[in-house]
Structure formats: C-alpha cells, structure tokens
Image (cartoon, rainbow, N blue to C red; front, side):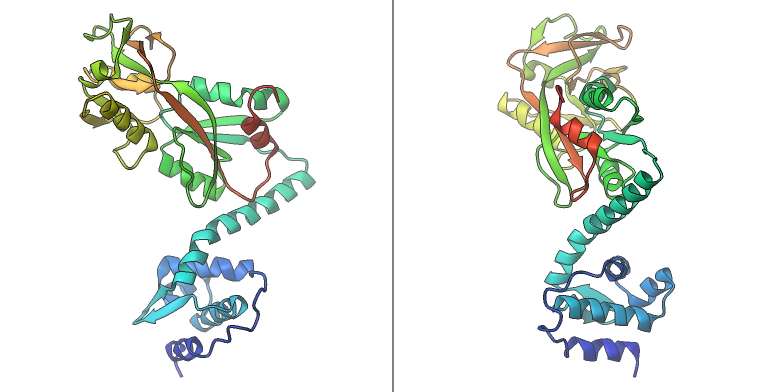
Amino acid sequence: MTNTDNWSNHKHSLSFKRGAGAPLDLHRLAQFVAVTDHENLTEAADQLRLTQQALSSAMRQLEKSLGVELFDRRGRRLVLTEAGRRLRQGAPVVLAAVAGLADATRQTAHGRQPPFVVGHSPAISAEEVFAVVEPVRTALPDLSVTARQMFVDEMHRGLLDRSVDVGLRRGATTPPDLAAAVIGYDELRVAVRAGHPLAEQERLTIADAAAYGLVVWAPPTFSFYTDFLVAACRRAGVEPSLTVHSMQGTPPAAAVIGNDLVAFLTTPAGPALGGRVQVLALTDPPMVPIQALWLPHTISEPRTVLLAGPGT
C-alpha cells in the first residue's frame, strides 16, 4: 500500500473523540507549517529530512490529537480544510512565541541582554523614534537599543522571526497575527522643496498642498498611512495624484527634493535638511496615529516601558 493510500484511508477513519482537548505538539505543529508551505508531503519531507511515511504519520497524529481533519487530498497536493487554515494562521505566532521564550530563558541564565530592536516605517522619522524610545533609555540605561527603518512588510516578517522586538508605523488596524496599540498622535504637516511655490506660505490647507500631487511610500490599500492621506485629501475636496517614493533609509522630508511634489509628514515646521526643504503647518491639521506592533504571547520589559510612554 502506498503512502497516498495510507493518507486516503486515514482521512476516512479519524476518530473525532480521541484526544479531544489534548495540547498541541509543537514539534508536529512546526512540521505542519512546513507541509502547508509546500502543499506536498514529499517536498516537505525532503526539507525536514524525514521520510514521507514518517511525516505522513506525524500529520495523522496531529489530526488525531486535535480531533479534526486538517487536509483535503486533491491529486498530489494537500489542500487545507477550514480547520487547517485556522491552525495555519495561528501557528507562526505560537511557534515564534515559544522560540522567543526559550531564547529569553537561556539569555537570562547566561546573564545576557540582547539589543532591543525597534523597526519603524519611513513615515516615522528617526527623531520621532528617539522620542518614543526615550523612556526605555531612561528606565533601562544599560540596555542597547537599535532603531531600523523598514517598510511595513519587512517589519511584519521581522516581528514574526524575532529579529525585531517592536514595530512602529502610522496605522490603527491590528494585523491578525500580531498585537498592536496606538501609543500617540502627531500633527500632520507638509514638506516642499526650497523655492517651491508654497514654500513662503506660513499656513495652508490640505487642498492647497494636494493640488501639487503627493509623494507617498506605498500605494493605496497597501498602507494605512497612504489611505489616511488620500482620505484626508478627499475630505478636503481634492482627488490627489500619487507618486510612490521607493527610497528607504532617508528622512521623510527628502522625498520632495528635486521635484514639485508635496509630502505629508509629521516633522516639526521650519527649514529641514540644511534648508533644502521647508516644512509647513496646515490649517486644522489632522492628527495621525503612531502604532506599536509586537509578537503576542511574549514578555518584554523594554516593550512594556515603551508602551507605557513618558513618566515610566
């Protein structure tokens, strides 16, 4: 009898009472993730350096422990059931949290304190990040803190693989596999190049600025911040034209150097970048949220201090 036949027979003989309520086997859960990544037992077994029969048996045991079917067999592919999709959605967070706890336990035992890594989107300047992490530096003066600018997709991956401890972005919604909290709000302002027709105005409206076209860091629907800016322009009666600025690692105000576009940002009003950019205040400016993201089911003293804010 082939492994395929074994799997097919197993599918129709699951006992849904056996093992009900049993805790997840984390080793089998990690194997399950590998299987779903490949949608094929043979390829997953090769990656895990197991025989196909051993991996098939592990998936049978995982299904028995849960009392549910996780896969529908369709040809040579393994297609997730609805229950399987739910398990796959939550599995990376659980595995990452367990790995993080193991690392933290070893580091504590050896007296090591790894750097606290804060990722931030291009919409949040280095100066703003400094202000957010200042309570951490005050409360934990011996802790090394590293700030890294990154796009939100990279930040998300970094949080799951634990190369980033906290992510900061302009947002308000919570990703399904992360924890989140809005930790503050900043006033929206406008940056233009020196010599721009708007540069001499002390205050202006969103409609005045949006008429010149906006430079943003991600397309609409891919960024809460871009969607926020577009919505603000539409409320002001303007449908803005958008240009995506793909350069990473530079101050947000740098996006308007060498063009006549405007950038909405939260940098303080006044000259910036050696006078090459002018940041202008808006009349009745919207307030933009700053959101912290982190891996749920984890414990972190510096993160607790950061989330509590000034005065901790």
